[in-house]
Length: 578
Image (cartoon, rainbow, N blue to C red; front, side, top):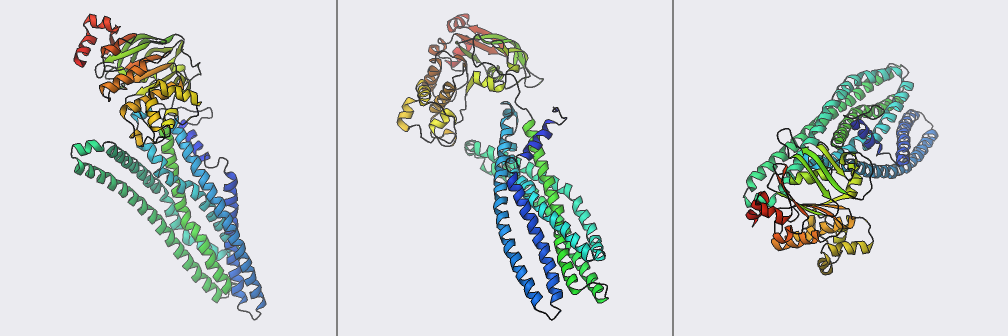
């Protein structure tokens, strides 16, 4: 695990960054709320003192002091209400900004991960972190910070007044609450583990629901509704069981704390009554105020262990998110010019996803600038792996990959993505307008957008439906060919010098696939590397070179006519395709 210059690990630094996100440009609202809570706690103590004075004054014969105390109580009540309104407004503003910034920071941390990490990791981890876990973090860190302030101020103030009234009664109250408080604090670790278990089960539940909804057609076609319902039910029960155990842990801490409250208040009341009867300097008013102060002191004693347990649980969730966000972080590198002058050179490149088998083995090739290359081969031959390496998905390859003279490992990913764009088999279309899907929510001059639309063959669709047409969830309002043309337009709009195409037409009908491939090959001044299984002669002849992969190695390379004349691997593939 990497460490920064100050000795912190990446996870520790990320955790602190997430914590700081609550207070970024938000400290004013936090401190205003904290001051209001401190004043409100002071008003509670003031009311306790007033009760003592009114009780003792009521035993006299002069009504004037009682009336004065009543008017003072009314003024305190009005001030209490005004401060309470300010506290509510500032506290709500703090929570709004804190959670907005926290989720933004969490998403930013996730988005800094490398492209390949999402192929190997469970995205349900991040869905849970941004939903269920975020709610627990709000309760355990943002809200509990305010609760800790008011409870701590109340506890310290109540103890100070109790000591001023009677040190002996104060000592008795502390002894009565010491044991239950100790037991409550010891339950904090159990609470953190329970919160972690809920997070883990929620992650699995989200992953299961996501899989079921994504594979709904498969479920229906295999008539597996009953089995899938059983799987869903099992995950659902495991999640609810974890939440049940968390609730039981919370209730146990609360029960112990409430027991402390009852024992302490009753014990102090009885001892105070005894001292008043025996003439030990305790008046009835002091007994009443002591019970009131014990209630104020015991409430923090009852709730502080639970609040501290919630904070520990929320901090565990921050650690979980930090560990996930720091895994497979996007590699850093130097900025390079977004121009390809010579080409892309692979020298003795080998790569494997594991130690068992290499996906690519000793590949050496030059993709020259401005030319078109078709990469063909059977399943598992290494075609998609080659494109993944060119997109910077994996750094653990042997050999050398260079864009002009710049080694791929040394290029920053931002610079790389200014050099290369990719069109994949499964084009993701956002539930937004056609224009926003083409521009990817960025601002481009209208003439650039129009040019990309025309070159991608999208002009008929735009004329029919307009740029403001809503594409629907994952582009369900578009055909497969239209989605692929949206992907082409995206890439053209970015104007990267290299375009990678990974089986972009495999799910399309023959005519649409031909039109989409023709559109790609018709683009000028672009280096194209196209992985395809469609070997139509009219299209294959338009490529400058065809690369045939077999078992991770280059088996053949050449023009269509040359490869067909060899009657080798490409010839066999063409005959099978035909």
